[in-house]
Length: 270
Image (tube, rainbow, N blue to C red):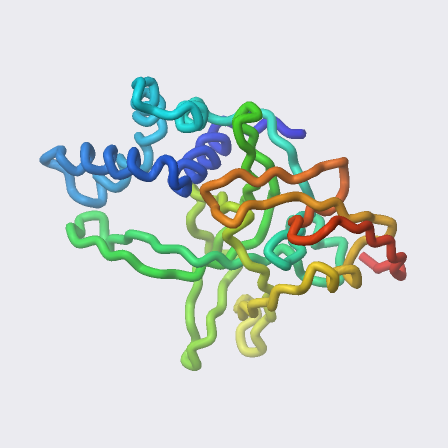
């Protein structure tokens, strides 16, 4: 268990709200209110919409026409959260970057498909929506608890700028960070990837996506002596994920009946 600092708590809560179907109509309502204000540029309005929505939504949810679930979401999550170093979902086994350092395989690299609204410069009045693939590395895995109303598993990541070489291959530089104010993503939204260092430039790492594995084809990379517990992630990012936790264990989705796999492996060097 960990206690989130106020900045991380706000970032995680905001991401949940902006990715919840039950909150979507209130997001549009607040966006309309912000856009109705004159004298502000569009990029400034977009920033205000993102920064001010949580406080506005908490007040808006006090009205009688709001469901109990939405009211509960508006109050925010518990500051105390569960923390994991490993998580299995979507056919992938994920590790935090720190845990990855003790393994021979890379399991902390992630990709997420995102639609973002961007402006060329702060004075630009024309925004555009781009479909992007973002690349990052997992720093923390937490379960956000809305006081037992619902729970969400989030991955906190370092995100990196993505570029393409002349052959159209995507690469990143690990010293060029982005989205530092929005580090969280839902566990249901991400895919696993790994990176390969380029031959010509030492700091250039090419990103390779991994193919999801079957639930019964994941024992060859498990830690010796560990058993698998089965959680139940939802099919939609708008619904909570309720993993089962018993300390240092893997959490896996329940598409099939639960089994325990106990397969010893050779000791891996650090």
